[in-house]
Image (tube, rainbow, N blue to C red):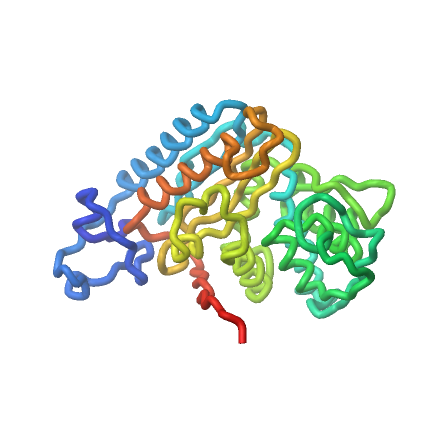
Length: 339
């Protein structure tokens, strides 16, 4: 099976992927403003592209130093092509990347009718994590009531630490782990503590995080509504932009669903790059630790800079290529001036 792309891209001149491009289909040559014929992209072209994505990873991870555990794939007509496989089955602390898994567990309960998004939970002063990430700790006025939907929005965009505890009120640690095991992710587990409603974010492997994301975009993990909710949050303008999405336009950022995690000297990020039609194109789980600058949680950390360069290069390399599978069109971004 082949896919098609325009001749400019085939020649390496670059273009933006057409909105209709999926594996096996393309916009006809007559619809091309330049009037150029299309060229078939054969499996070997995808293999070369996967290899180039892997080469960029090797270059940038070597430049950043430290330890890297990663798994990256490129969508193909017969399944994903592995671009990066670096200690992919090593079970490690996933930190806030596992907030995706926590959200999946909570939304699984919503899908089964055991919980609703408008269910309210109480934000008490005692439950607030101070000094960390998020906005609940900035409120300065407690108690307050928020919905589960509000909690998930903060969990997956600004990576709110208090939101983890609020999720634990409606989906305790043992239940989170049971749900994830039942869905086929035994290594993606939160770490229970004495309080059954609280947990550390626990572990995963690069391969399992990658597979969880692929199941999510395939629609086999959650209902269509819950799938859309997770992807909309991870693709939103307020979601993480220091890493893979940093050197991108707002339109390009909207094509990337991503979640980062950081603690001590670890800097992780996992997500999906979609083509312009919204089909999954590249799925990545990039875990890193041991680099210099352990006290730098900003965009200047070596591993974060490496991910930013990798993301920009992958976006350029995949221009003109179509993804595969269920399409997830981006929600329009309309800035507001109040009023």
